[in-house]
Image 1: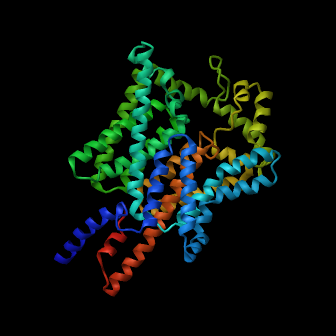
Image 2: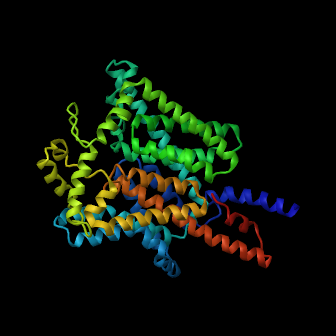
Image 3: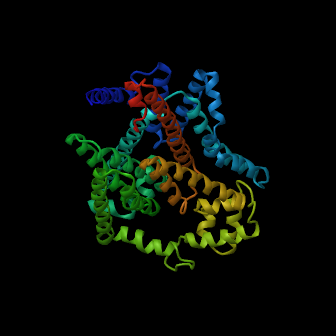
Amino acid sequence: MLTKIIFLNAAKAQKMKAMFLQNDGLANKISYWHLVLFLLTLSFDGFYSQVVLISFVVHTLIHAKRNDWNNLLRKEVFVLASVFFLTVMCTIYSSNQREAFRLLSRQSAILIFPLVLFLNRIDLRKCTKPLLLAFSFVSVLVVFYLYVDALRIIRYNHLPLSTLIKPAFLNHNFSEPIGMHATYLSLYLALSLASILYYGTSTRRPLIRTLYFFSACVLLVGLIQLESRATLIALLLLLFFVAPFFLKDKKQRGLIGISVLFVAALATVIVFAGSFRTRFLSEMKEDLSENSVATSIADSRMQRWALATDLIKKSPLIGYGAGDEVDLLKEQYFNHKLYDSYLNKLNAHNQYISFLLTGGALALTIYLYTLFWGLRLAVKAKNFLFISFVVLIAVVSVSENILSRNKGIFFYGFFFSLFVCAHCKRKTASVEYESAKQTGNLTVHSYVSIDNV
């Protein structure tokens, strides 16, 4: 017993060093800080994150060993990159080759992330937690910045403070200063909130718990300000139906309390703030209506989905090819007098329908299999944050073409690859631990190797 206590205490100290790769080689340290810098820049102009990604790829190729290349033949790599290969296939018979290659260029990140993370020697088991926390606290700072910018504008124009909850500072208008689509920023904040709640409820230090709680409140307020209905629905599903089944009892109590606070805050805002009530109730009802609303300029999603469904019926098996979605829909919009959608060149705003238009039933099946495969892996590993990521992607895919824009592609490609790669390395470490246990060669490293950070 005493020996085990000594091992566990030593393992805790070893784990703290391992989290920041203090005992690792120089190449792995550089890889780690590349990933940190990538996450720090992800919420801002795409130029910065792309430069960091290119640098990380070059660094990985330079330090890759002969045996490392065998990792690229793993099944996980092909499943993670399946969406990219799907777009390649659909590009062949596209009638708009120019747009198809643009989409292919953007989605190349879905191929690059699994390749580079499985090729790189960095142990993602050790740094998943600090990476997620770095991403989360940057998200908190982003929300702070957006509120400071909004308050600066209100003060400059001598507007009442209540203007902050008016349409001029909600949804896309709130995220506009950093040039991000409100839904994609909401995705970032939702995963950040899940990470902060998960790690915050497990710490025993009062000061750190306070910091986590304050950060969670900031992210929660930011999510409500952004008004992404799909993201908020996904978050409710996570807090009420996922967290109680995949977290320990102590963490359950903390997250259930936060869930109640979240619902109470959201309900209060909807009831007492007219702009939020319009967005979450009236506009949502209009968006799901099949008929045009006389008082609304915008066309409902349901109308666009109905027109897209008519197109799908004409080519249900292979679709129309990559890059053709907007052109096909524009013609339908014009013929059915959806002029707002026509002028703004809107896509289907549904990733599942988008795949049906692009590659038919085959494309949708591959995408659904990828999500199911990821969810099954996450549930089997009892990884709450991995489950949270898959649920967010699956739910938001109902209302957005999440894999058509760089911010959505980077979010999907990086975090999916990160969770899967960390899971694979953790599984390998568990096998090594059991082997060491049976042979009697148990060391402090063996304890650290199976720790789920």
